[in-house]
Amino acid sequence: MSSTTLTDASLPLEIQLCVEKHIKYIQSLDTRRDEYEYWLTEHLRLNGLYWGLTAAHLLGRADVLPRQDVIDFVLSCLHSNGGFGAAPEHDAHMLYTVSAVQILVMLDAVHELDRYFPEGKVKVADFIASLQDRETGAFKGDEWGETDTRFLYGALNALSLLNLMEKVDTFMCINYVQSCANLDGGYGTCPGAESHAGQIFTCVGALAILGRLDLVDGDRLGAWLSERQLPNGGLNGRPEKTEDVCYSWWVLSSLAMIERLHWIDGKALAQFILRCQDTESGGIADRPGDAVDVFHTVFGVAGLSLVGWEQTQAVDPVYCMPKVVTDRALAK
Image (cartoon, rainbow, N blue to C red):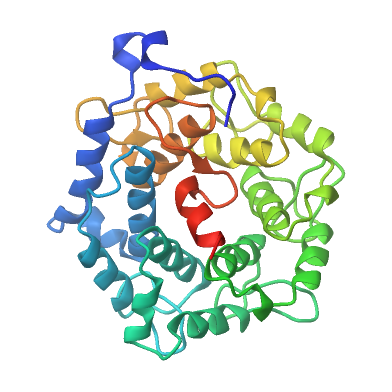
């Protein structure tokens, strides 16, 4: 977290953090079942629950969603192979499985998996481990075989939270991440792919979990990441692209992990994020004037946390979860 605490007092009234509006927005998301968009985004339901729950925690309102209802929904997405789908009757996938684990860890409810399997968390870990290519170290997203550094990071995120890292070949994970490194200091989706802030987060996050941040060229990567800040304070994901609130997370978290968070103008970024709020109905958009969504809401709030915004709780830059939660889970 930034050493300087930023406050609403330093900004005009019209761009202060609308905490209560955002909480009401998060609470409203599952009440819109008569809207077309609700069903159009069913493939993001479990991810969306993680985004909303995390945002609420970071805003200091961890209890605003009904705990048992959340747990019951998560478990309704569980498959017999230990993986989770996006919603009931959706296929199991790495990304949804990671969100499920993160939600259960935030709610201190991993033991609820035992309602379905003996040693439930081991069953989930076995599903995750089954998706690793032991020859390359890469991970598939599901049985159909797509590989991406997002899946490798997600696997390590979930397994470390479950304290079951021994299920995978971590040495090969390190080798694969290193094979995705580029001369500009960044990382891509796979070997030879261009550097992108989102993939940089997944690769640096994976190395952080594995205790191998020494392999990152901090100055070179820090320079590339700091160049993502535009004159309006926002960040983009790669050169010549438009700013987007979600990169407040992907860029800043990576800078935090390599201890170069001060290479970004945090106040300018905070002002950009706050201008992207819907100050009437709550939520945060990708950029000012656009429609809000829960994806940009959580990453906007997480970005504010990383720059030290006083109305936010500390976020773990490796996991995008409340620091108090990851400290508890990783200490077990």
